[in-house]
Image 1 (cartoon, rainbow, N blue to C red):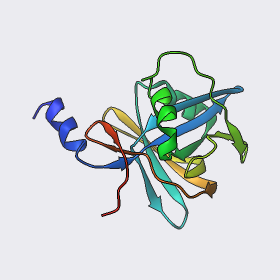
Image 2: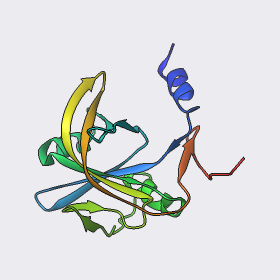
Image 3: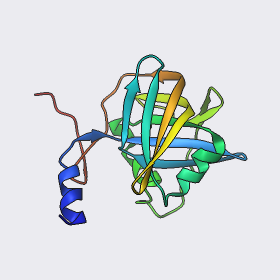
Image 4: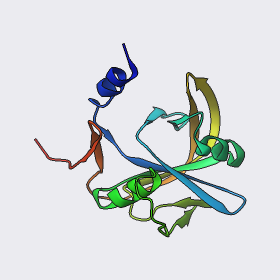
Length: 154
């Protein structure tokens, strides 16, 4: 099978959208990701997948910590900024939670310490041990077949 067919098949899985953030030497870094999942309740672990060529891989390795911000529908523009889809400069404001930069108004912000890493193929899987999290109500930003979608109840 070719890469395009594989990507098409993976796009058939509807996901939420996150922005992963970290800070190195006073500079905040972020990237949009939909490769996120919970791993364990005891201990509380989550997983993110980062391309080995992505700058964010080195940033997380250096910092040893990261936050996952689960985006609401109102944060589509932030998703596009951190995915590199918006080219003009834009100042993004962060708030602090457990010493980490997070995005205000996210449905959840999960602050983690790197617990383990696994290099698999062209990605690195970062297992994060949850330090703390905050949650608020709202509608999720969804992604399906390469497009942002709105949540609709059946």
